[in-house]
Image 1 (cartoon, helix red, strand yellow):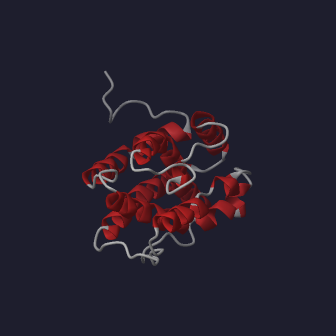
Image 2 (cartoon, rainbow, N blue to C red):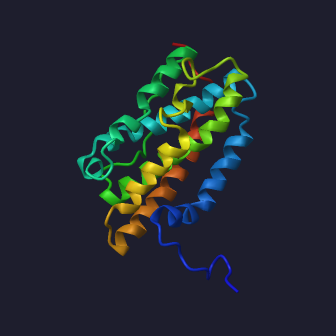
Length: 202
């Protein structure tokens, strides 16, 4: 009988990534829910600021030629401009960068960070419903949670198909998995940072 530790690893990279990041993903989920991001507009603003910090840190990766060679529509997948517009809607100052952002990642590492960003679009399908209860929408304050034109499922499926097709060495796959875990940990850290002080009005 196979246990989680002895079960064969999936052949698809995307499935291996999901398994390899389960702990950091779940830790982030607990942290997010513990902050009750949709309990009030103030709470949501903190959450949106963390999203802004994270997505802007990854913006440059979306035009990295090492990645766009494999994922041609990666530039269009970037949500940095959307979350910036959301914070402007909320009337708060854009937060200053927080030291520790990913810098000069290898191709494999960059793919790991982008994997986490893309995966968050699936969860956004649930979050946008809660955001609407605060009077927000895909056109005001919650643009970054909006549904991709082709639908969340199809958007994700096309991404993981391209990700799974990238040729990497076993060592690079290890780098990719570590980078994805680092991305979840980074967002957890940024989330905590945004709650240190109240958002400043623009």
